[in-house]
Image (cartoon, rainbow, N blue to C red; front, side):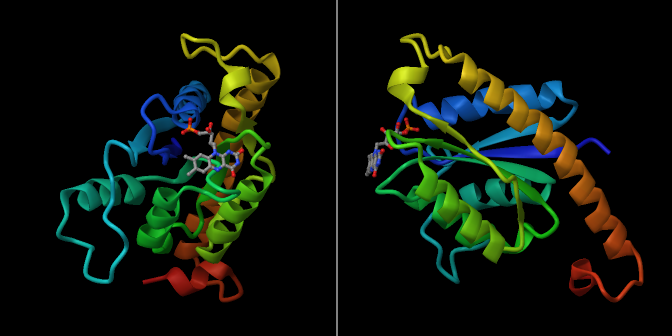
Length: 196
Ligand SMILES: Cc1cc2nc3c(=O)[nH]c(=O)nc-3n(C[C@H](O)[C@H](O)[C@H](O)COP(=O)(O)O)c2cc1C
């Protein structure tokens, strides 16, 4: 299968480091044989989650189509007070039920390595029954990029290459196994509850 990877950029800043890093990660993921798309919550803001907010908003419709067509995700966020951006949390609140059997990679722009941010993204994704990559990529925009927006830190470049490669490989294995489990009659598998 060709893995379809959706990158979700959630900074509310034009010229965002986290979204720019996400673009680079997606490019590397496509070099590893996946199909990639970018959903920028800056350009396509979602209304605050409300039980009546689904289904009557063109931004939600676009995001729904992109989420449902994806097998794996890269979530990118700035560090906002040690946590993910509100827009990313809101995205997860909208689409939590579409994450089972899908793998998530993480990017965080922070001045402090973003460890608590990564933890919170992983916790939220686990609650949505998604699978998480065991490491993330933290960037410090002022140190890792030059004025033209190119990466100047070779360690960051290597880590992004690793994330892109691992997400495509492990994401495909998990997705294929989940789909096989959906199609089988085996009872003792997590996927059983998702059978129609
Ligand atoms: C509301 C707000 C809260 C922030 N809180 C933190 C923080 O707790 N720790 C930190 O290192 N940076 C914090 N920052 C700085 C951003 O994380 C940092 O500038 C980051 O590079 C922004 O990412 P972006 O370029 O993708 O928007 C905060 C910025 C904003 C706007």
